[in-house]
Amino acid sequence: MFSRRTLVLCAILVTCRADLTFPEHFKLGAATSSYQIEGGWNADGKGESIWDRFVHENSADIKSGATGDVAADSYHQWREDVRIAANMGLQFYRFSISWPRILPTGFTDKINQAGVKYYSDLIDALLAEDIQPIVTMYHWEMPVKIQDLGGWTNPLIVNWFGDYARVIFSQYADRVKTWLTINEAIAICDLAFNKGHYAPKIKEPEFAPFLCNKHILLAHATAYRIYDREFRPKYKARISLANFDLWIKPATENDTELADLGRQHAIGRYSYPIFSKQGGWPPSIEKLMLQYSLGQGYQYSRLPPFTKDEIEFVKGTADFYGINHYITSLIRSAKPGEDPGIWVLTGSPELNAILEFPTNSKVANSIFPVYPEGIRQQLSWIKQEYGDIDILITENGFGYSTNDYELNDVDRTQFFKEYLEQVLLSIKVDNVSVIGYTAWSLTDTFEWLDGYTVKFGIHEVDFSHPNRTRTPRTSAHYLACVIRARSLDVPDHCYKDKYLADRARIGYRSGSHKIQAVLFINILLIAISCVFW
Image (cartoon, rainbow, N blue to C red; front, side, top):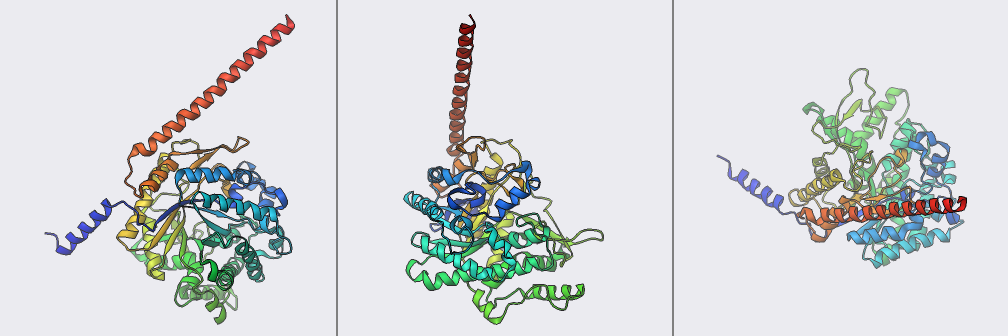
């Protein structure tokens, strides 16, 4: 016989499983970033970014030698982006501002008014469609002059970023109610400097990742404090940053302590100083880094310390927790001969650990294994670690590296179904305060080293067309149905019928072009015959 407690728990789970409706406060949107979609890399006074320099000088590092020079051409086609977002009924659209499009040199001596107007027009158009803009201030586009002065390893960047933030707030604070200062700090610091694969293409794994880590936290806090003092009393927006939170599980029961260290190393270094009550670095990581550094022969920790004033300055500088979730991994101790590291995001060997994907994850055609339960587990961990804070899922998406799906991206559609169901369980069973979900990405984008070979878009972009035509995939129609119903309980025909209609429309259009081409060739042949006759 089952106990009363077990029966009650089962009843709760069944009820929650059947209730697929979203809470009233929960919002659904989609995201992109400036370098990945805008193009116009040197248009209208824009300065050069580190990614402009990287793709032009290191074309062999990127598949097919692709660049973001044009990308989805959103610098010229932004009205199309607003149109497709409105057609879906998106409640918000997350985009980023290109630092060198606003400040070509990175400094406030020159403000590019064409860049200011571009984002102002985009914000106004979104609001006219009742779509709230969520603005990311830094999504990897650093002006080259700032990088030439040391970039994120130079402590002066803390104030330089603050100056940039003040300009952005001055221009858009009257209309933007949600801000993200920095996107995926772990990629900026650990991935870029440990491996040297990403812009600025500098490999220095000993000190650069940790200097970058500290300076990014101080820069974020500086922007937050500027808003607090100068803009919050009037505009009352919410501010955070978007962390790439690699979810780490123990491979065996013996790896539980190692898994916690892994989480603190990959997540805590970027979250604990802001969201914990104590502030500063996670104590376990401070201890680990000191011991490892001393063992290397250094007289001090490679992890730079915070002063007491800096700890207080950074602590509490977020109004919600922003999380980009893509990957769940298992952690275990490295075996003799294995090269330890935290996946590709850091080559740091301090943990002497290896990450592997769960054996029961679904690989399919995704570039990342699909493990929906991971997002729920991670949301619960954030609540356990940092308290009952609002959480905004700032990115979650399905990328594949083939053209098998064309418009009928059935695996991506199923991905969104399964991950959103886990988010609902997190809200309704685990009582986690998740306030929104962001699909990555609104359109196909330039996917960094993968160029245009990896597709995350819920809208296909025809990169061979001069207008970069956008066409909704099945996943876009599915999410639109979910948004309208405010529930995952939507009938298949709601989105499948729209996909079939799109296919018929595109097929007819293509057929018409073929007919016109045949007619033109026939007329041309007749004309040539007449001339020679």
